[in-house]
Length: 514
Image (tube, rainbow, N blue to C red; front, side):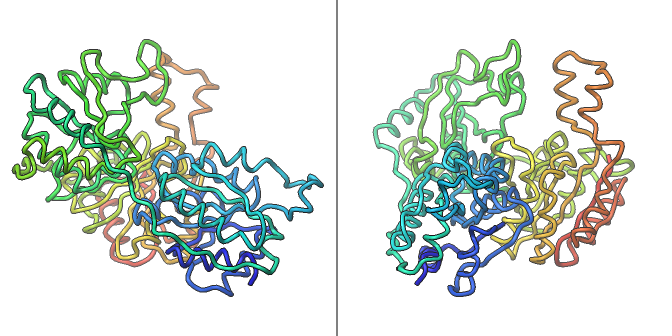
């Protein structure tokens, strides 16, 4: 058995079901192995940013690591932005990076590079194959590491280790579980919340934003007279009639300070202390009012759901009635489109249990503001801030959940980074409806210019924040990749386009002109 075949057989035994791939010459032994070893579905993407983003979306919806197959250091480099987002999302995945044959590496061929230095900032574990005999066991190391750390793992696989005979499948241990929170920590937080002094807030992050986590946190907050917040950009948050409403922290630091004003304690549950996206003059890096004391119930590595259940018992909240809140009313959008109108059209037409991938950027905040009015659904957001995640994450989510409709609320500027994802959606017949918020500008950068006091930018500044001249024809782009498309400029047109897209299987793109 070749090293490549033993690695793939071990991946199958570990429960890996999908490999998102953009291979090259050094990966040919692994490409061949997919015909020799059954069990792992190979999904081709035209760009490495699509590969890594799709693996992220897949992991967010399943919790199961996908493989990626990338071509040497430059291939990895092309996928790093979405690996950055995946690291922030704590998404497990195993990146298999092809490497030159061991005896060829000293020749410093044109594609030779320091792969470890590229991989380390976006990986929790980095390793190399040492021989065809050990390749499968080294894959298991990567598999165990990605599940233990909930971070991408990177295995650099030398071509000769893959094409040579001598490989044998490796035994796959039971997957590691999250460590639990110490009872003393739970007791300390329970006493703090039950003391009756001040008003506490719970901040949920990571897997604590699952329905069970939100419900348990809401019971605790109702009992102790506090409130529940969710981190600004959750990897995944579920909403529905049976899930209490929770507030997300705002984007700008001054708005976070206002949101947290009046609270005495902030308890972190799978979240970190709020941090500003950027350093703004006169604003703190950690926008938490000075009078708030910050405490950690569970960090990102620990079992935050279990900790919440323990805290509910300790505070007498486990049987508390869930708080009820009125769902927002969503008016039917009319006339020329706005960000609020696009969000309303999506909410009014989305199927039950849809997956909403939100990379609307300057238009994206309009959706979560009214999302509680939508049918039960999941929302996936940009955890790391590197744009170009929306289309790839939507692709991976659709592969993960073929029985659920996927809606990609997508800014036009960031869509241009990884638009090749449309081709994979067409090839795999994925049920993804992409709504392009086409304002033909980097709206967030123009907002930042205004925040910097630049109310009348010059010609150069305007040029660097404009996507016009020429304006991208998104309907033509979509058709070029094999995806049916339409254009809407009014609320009524967008409602009609979305209903038509949801009624027909397969991918669609709607250009919503702002």
